[in-house]
Length: 220
Image (cartoon, rainbow, N blue to C red):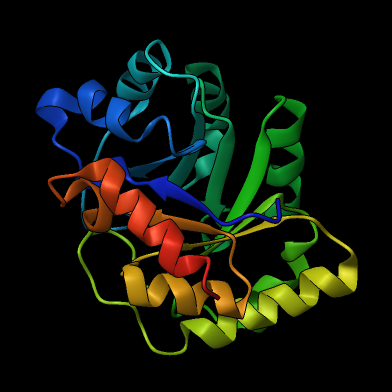
């Protein structure tokens, strides 16, 4: 994946008309970002498997599912069966991240690892080679609408360098505080998939917001 893409995050969408919200961005975006929170690993609770299964009936978008949950290994088959395409977990939430990546692949899905802003990079790097997607959190996970954290760009660049060294075509995704300015900076550092919640669904013209983000990011 060489082109820059936007993954709208439904956490910021209007859940009362969620399918209609998705329809507005569907022509411009291949990916749809779905945040799953358990109230344990993060202090918030969001949607779960029934919503994902229902949404799967209404769109062919790539479901980029971010599991902010403890013990994700207990649930990956259910998320796979519900229709997730990428299943991303936090490495500190499981005892064996490498094995979990293999199990996700065995289910016919693509594994992703998420990097918490407070997680030392040296603890993450051994697992970069195992994943098809590296999700770099640029905010503390659990809530939308936060500001892009300092230090994120260096972390993106470090992962980019490691993927290049490995010859890996894994996607670098960035989640949190994405706007027209930070989109360009993140892509300059090596990101190719930008998760955007408020920057898309918080705007009256969702499709126009996606176009603006793509235009700004492509100037990198």
